[in-house]
Amino acid sequence: MISKYSLLDWNGLKTHINPEHSKTLRPMLIIRKVLLNCVVGLLILLALAQFPKPAKANTLKVSVIKLNEIAVYPIKSAFASAISLNNSKLSAEVSAKIKSINAEVGQVVNKGDILIQLDSTDYTLALQQAGANLIAAQSNFALSQKQLERAQQLVSDGFISPEGLNKRETEFALAESSLALRRAQYEVGKRSVAKCSIKAPFKSVVRERMGQIGEITVPGSPLLRLSDLEAIEVDARVQPKDIESLTLSSSIKFMSDGITFPVRVKRIAPVINEENRNQTVRLKFSKNQPSIGSAGAIRWTTDKPHVSTDLVVQRNDQLGVFIFEEEKAKFFVLSNALEGSPAAINLPGDTLVIHRGQHRLQDGQFVSITSD
Image 1 (spheres, rainbow, N blue to C red):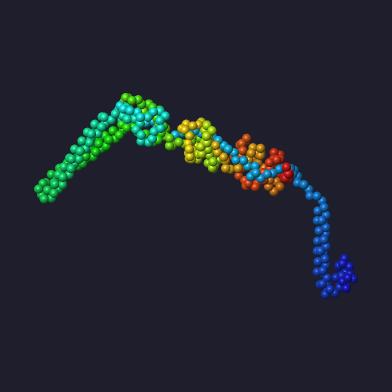
Image 2 (tube, rainbow, N blue to C red):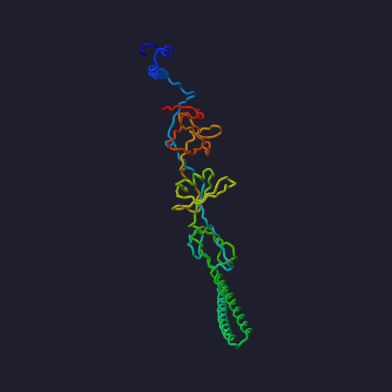
């Protein structure tokens, strides 16, 4: 029997047991040896578990908070003023005596109102003369047309020569060109008379009066200065670093003398002014609008989350914040950060930001979270 032999006497067992028993005994010994190794390994693991786990080297305690709980949305501003797109100087197009001025400084006038009336006597007489010449030219044209039609009929019947027909055709062409000339002169006369009534080109306010009654106007000399009341915009000077936040902002306001006016961006000049290193931005009023020339500032709230300056630290000449990730402090670079100003951050709202103990940290350092 197998039990009569010692397990340690493996060589002797091979010599004394028969081959059939050897085939049964070998697998059992292998299984027993595997089970013994498993028991020994388990005992070793249990023994190791009794010892405390060694702490990671250079582990610091920090406090963390979610980004959406500390994010700030700073209000930015820039100097601005309300301007009129059209500050026009009305001048005479013809030379004539000023007969009347129907607008004074500060007066609001509507489009089409007659502001200055010039003496149109000479131009009216010239128009009458041009009208008479036009009537004569029309009569001459009608006669030449009839004579040409008659000559065409006679030449086909052989009563006149082709040279006679050519003469009538020439006379008709001259009459036609003369009619066009007289008609153009008549239209010029009409325009000259109309130019004696100087009208407002848009709804505006009279800012300055240069012309005086009785003066003889010179074409091109200014008589009145007007400011358009329907085309008012905000002219702002914005720092290049703030252009993006201004473009993305959904709430922009122009403030002047304590009054707020909603505005929206109309266009941004793609160049930087050389004198003050800013960019010109034009904004359009959404509802009400202030008086022309009102000075103030535009203010807008940034739509991107920012972190306050006390969270920003500098590492390797770069500004950023430390975030908690996989038991380590990770340095997140804020590319557009400036010292002393809140910095925009592009991370999910549930990101854990280290807000206490960050000044001692290095990128990749192991940290542990402590409760405040």
